[in-house]
Image (tube, rainbow, N blue to C red; front, side, top):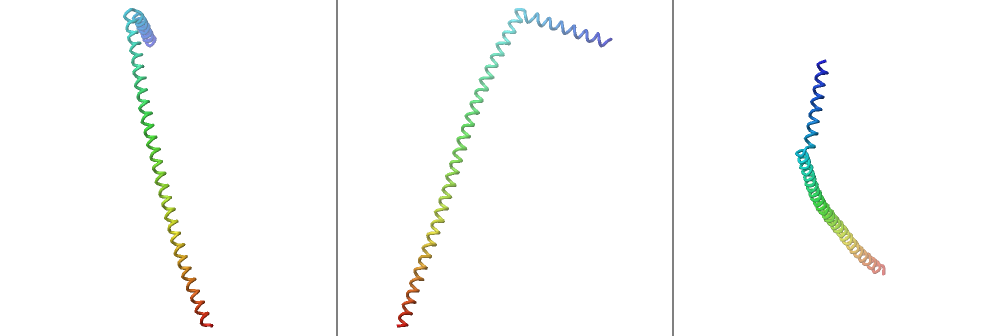
Amino acid sequence: MSDQKNQNWKLGFGLLAGALAGYWLNSDHGRRVRKEVQTSAVEYTNQATDYLKTQAENLSSTASEYIDQSKEAVQHAATVVKNKFTNGVDEVADQAEEAVERTESKLKRGISTARKNVKNSTEAIL
């Protein structure tokens, strides 16, 4: 039973507090306070919106800078790889050309030696 009385007391106090709050909010002073709170809430909302908009713009700008830097880095890396590949191809081509020249020189010496041998053999037979 004591719990029931305690609950009734809490309910009564809540009703009284609600009635007082409602009366106060509908009084002239309460309306002024409500209007001030509403004005402050709108002002803080606008400030928060402006702040978030500024932060979003800063973030977007920073992201764009990083994207541009990344593009430049990729282009630079592609250029370096291309140059190294081209230099490697040129080096291999030079080595191949030198090998062909050495082989050609050896063939000419071999042909020359063969001609001398044939000439010497022919002279020996005659």
